[in-house]
Image (tube, rainbow, N blue to C red; front, side):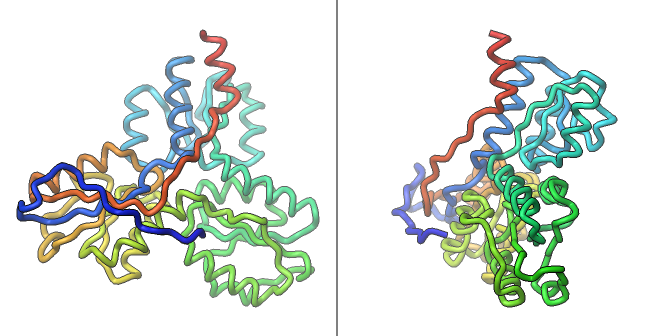
Length: 333
């Protein structure tokens, strides 16, 4: 990870002599480029093709986003048998396995691939190492949509590794041909602990030239790591099934600062703020800014909070829309 510097704070309008708590608002926070692309894709698909649009699994792991789209006529499914033949199906940001892609073709579905390019990168790495005869250790969480999709690229070659403790028991046919990949939304520290153990166990292990953990995941973790020492409490906006959001709360707790992972302002409990002078607020990569603003409004109204934006790194990454959607929009116009 690149070395970061905390830029001078910028203050939101507030009376400096007003009693109340201080809120440190982390930046960057919230949507990453992959989430922006996936959500924009679904919005445009609704506009160009009309509802219903089917999505395989949740478009992103966020309760607010999923509810908003469901209200617009989007149907989220866990089995492609639930999608009528010939319907429009969007693959979520987390990616899918080749088996799912083939099943979509077999059912004559109009597929739009909104997989995050950084997840696609991991899929391609898995295919490459499998073709070269490597055993691939995939560092990640069992059952996570991204992990399921990646393992589907080469199920016979991939072994899931969830903790350092399991590494010493790993057995492979050829210890000179092993590689590791990682889920893109992991805790950097947790992943590094497993990677270090793998390197001790398999000195010849290889890996991609660039980290698999996505830039946004690293940047949001970095901000919490740099800023939480100044806070008495950390609030992380994100859903319970969001891996990267969970990691943000866990990181703060590991550093000795109480933290809560919440979907929005309605989850905030008054007793969390007893004796609290400074609160750090951030959001996972799948949490929309609207839920952050609702929480800030509550803290202003109930705790006379002043908001101080703290920027630890600038982001300018963007990803193009899926080619299938670009064609559909062009045909519509």
